[in-house]
Every structure is written in C-alpha cells, then in structure tokens.
Image (cartoon, rainbow, N blue to C red; front, side, top):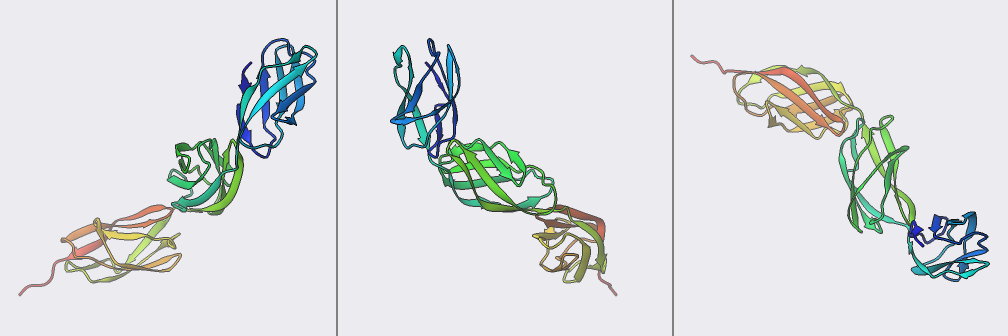
Length: 247
C-alpha cells in the first residue's frame, strides 16, 4: 500500500495519497496518534492532508474491515538559510548562486521574487541554482521550498546591463598614467576596468561616471571594457596609445 509523498512539513498540510485495495469508506487515517483530514476516497486510494508532527510516524487506514498495516511517513523541518553568494547579478539572469543553510536536501524550488528555478542539491547544507531573469532592476526576496516548507530571509539584487558612451581623453602615452573619465549608464556596481585586457585602477564617481588611470600599453587603439554586476560594456578602440616623441 504505497504512500506518496512519504515526507512532508512538520507543520502539516501536505497532501498525501495512499493506494491499496479495499479502502472504501475509510473512517480514519492516522499519522502516528494524530488523525489526518480525508479529502478523497475510492476503493483503491485515500487522499488526506497530513497533520503536524515530528520524526518518522506510522500511517494507517481504518475502514469497516479493520486497520491496515502501517507505512512510514517522514516529517521534515522547514529549511534554514544562512548565506547566498553572489548576492547580485545581471537582469538577464544566468548567474549560478550558492545557498548555504540547513535542511536543504529536499529543496524543490528557489524563487527570486516571482520567478522560480529548480536547484541542484549538493548536500543537506548547500544547494546551487541558476538565477532566472528578473522583471526589473532592484532587490528581490529569495525563498527556498523544501518538503519541510518555505523559508525566506535572503535577497538578490538585479542590475541592468551597463553602457559605455565616452572615453575622455581618448589617447595618451604608452607608459600609462593618463587619468580618463568614462561615461555611460548603470556604472554604480563597476568591478573592473580594462584597457586592451589590462586592468586599470578606477573610482566610481556615480551611476554614469567612472574615473580610471590607464595602465601601460602598446601603440595603437585598444578596447576599453567596464564590467559591472549587470554585465560588461565595451568601447571598441576607445583609447589610443601614442608613442612618445623622439629627437
């Protein structure tokens, strides 16, 4: 006489179906010593809503013909989330986020705001999930649903894709050291600036302005790339290294 699912929240409320034979006119379904609410009954099945409980309990069905043999039902506590990393990413989604906590081994869904994704279970203390696309830039709550229930308490911030509009000045010596102002949009979360792939020291002025100091480079035009939590923006050939004068 199978039982499905065979686990659920310690707070109760799990819809459970028990299948077998001669189950008509079931008068009681007990989870341990507690009665479940019967919501459906046929000769081969009984559907109930589990009561609250803890640990492993015996489930029995009582009909006019007697009481069945017991089946095991496992109560699972609500998950507890401790950390989420990274805590931000592009509006388009796609980042892989790691969530650490307790009771995550039965995780079936992770919701970012109103968008859900299916996690990969690493252990009872860790899951990973690919972030779904967001609706708009900003922070959303993150909830994890397991057989034990749903837990909230963490947040994730979506960032829009940056743009890079101007590089001023747009040329300087190959020795580097030129202070350059980069203007664009969505630059607040800038994490790196590169000239021809070489990292440059930078300071975020505001959401539309970043100040950077050019690293040394070879003669010629190079790409300037700004990377933020929302992605990357490139000024193709945005800066030109110029050879020094000789006499």
